[in-house]
Image (cartoon, rainbow, N blue to C red; front, side, top):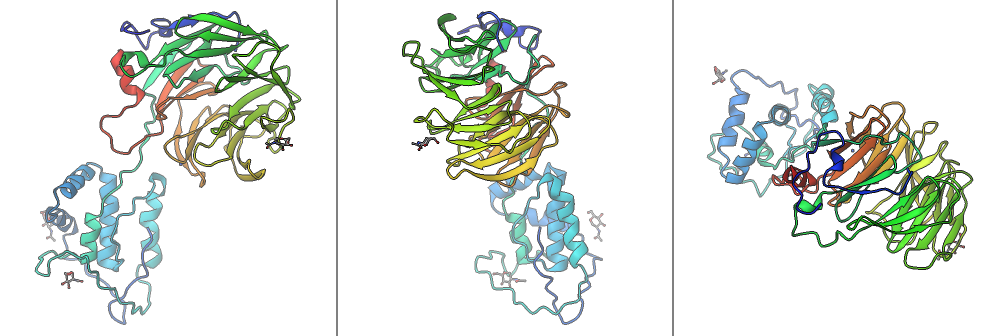
Length: 472
Ligand SMILES: *[C@@H]1O[C@H](CO)[C@@H](O)[C@H](O)[C@H]1NC(C)=O
Ligand SMILES: *[C@@H]1O[C@H](CO)[C@@H](O)[C@H](O)[C@H]1NC(C)=O
Ligand SMILES: *[C@@H]1O[C@H](CO)[C@@H](O)[C@H](O)[C@H]1NC(C)=O
């Protein structure tokens, strides 16, 4: 813990060093403008003498803005990007496409974007007399020797957004021996204070990523709630490694927990959700009864008003604070609902995922009770989390591909697919800075991935990666 530099990450059972161990006994993401023909006949350009690739570079050299030059240099390191720029330039010069800005296609769309327009519109016979409007902010000198049109100059100067790249390899892999392969459990969490907790066997391991930055973390006085196999909910003081209380009330294992301020909700195999204030005396808990089988997913809404719960009865329920009966009940999933996530961007938007027999991601407007989008992911959905920084979410999967998928919302286009776990990816937690995720699986590994970037081009990222590097 604080000041401990002796962590040797990457070794088996390395979670053990410099960590607090709690032992509570047994628990659980180019369109061409119409062809402008310059005369009433087909315009068939001659390419001879047009050393396009040379001209392309010449145009870049004529660029007076140093930052633009810099950008062009940066971009030239990526041949794929230049291919797109070159293709766009050719379309401007040969087809009169009049493109003024680079459209950076998504990696998967690139082939299509480059091929489709020419295949569709090259040599099309139309008389098109649309006058290209005079562009006042053209700053190409009339005396310019450049053979390129004004539009192409603009095109070459348009800023290029770098394509979002998500690393397909985890930046850190930790061994987590005895991490159970049980769909109904939730054994990994990452606190606001940058404390990672993992339930392994009969113990909970707490690993503090914050302590390498001694200055910026006032809140390492964290409470850790642990649900046990016997139905107890234990509250531990993370800093002291001391058990503060053990709450009774459940008659079977507690597989799901969710904090809401000082309130703690617990979901159990006994089908009941108990809600209690950790400061009040025992017996003051609220009993939420609605599920007919084990409760395996529990999440509080960002506004702290609603609790969503998922169960092995294939139901997704939404509860408010004034009733002991569910406010909403969604029965569309065809398998256990463990994956639940409230959008931090849109009030009342809830996402849920179904198990092996269902495989669907579903979205709900809980303000109106209306179902929104849904998509079949092709495999069991084990967990879901939204990005804090972009309208994207990540889902982790089990049977049969054990993959991690990053989605854009609301289009539900897949931004990335990460593979590596050899067992279903049952556990997921997001770092407090919202940039990294940690995934856990029955292959007894924890994998750390950078999936949600806060900004696109920060060289010095503030991600936990740096924290880890410093620990080493
Ligand atoms: C195009 O540029 C290359 C490289 O300088 C040169 O070798 C080639 O002869 C040029 N082609 C024409 C048609 O000017
Ligand atoms: C390009 O812009 C310059 C300056 O605004 C203008 O004089 C010239 O006619 C334009 N050239 C073409 C081909 O539009
Ligand atoms: C809470 O849910 C109950 C049960 O559906 C409903 O009757 C009640 O109006 C809701 N209360 C609020 C404040 O939304």
